[in-house]
Image (cartoon, rainbow, N blue to C red):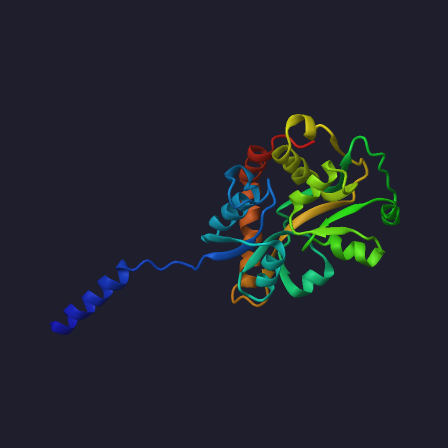
Length: 248
């Protein structure tokens, strides 16, 4: 009788414990309106990632770091993933990368309307003062092309340098660029900016999942499954529209 009581007590205690999967740990930076530590209106991709994983029964924790450190921490397995990044052959070897993009937009060169900037090939940039952001892929691209770009730690600085005439052009996401301009400048100063009509790139963005994380490969597969459910339900489109409106 005493043994039966003890067994019942153990079963009761075990049933009262909530067993849950560990949270997916993401290391990301500041890149409004896609990701942001402080502005809920600039957390579009956190919203997408959280919603997709929720459909797979997983929660997500975000740690906000400089971009280079976010990348390194994920590579070393200190985080399970980092986003948003472009996919390339080198990263496909270093990380697990899912199939369904988080979002796709264009990379363009921003400049002042009064600056007669034009380009056709990368070598044309040698005629201009070019800005770049440390940790972004453009730094390596410019180095290989022999373009003396001025790299700084924060993307905001590049837009301030354009406005001050210290650089001529800066390549970034069209969506992020105009969001940054609107945030940094008053209406008169913002109206001075434009972008070149020729896109630098079409950029599908992905999560890089760590190969040194115990669950990196599993999380990559679960994210694709969750994204498919999110898109099929129509919720993905609703999230995008709620943050960006109609994109032209």
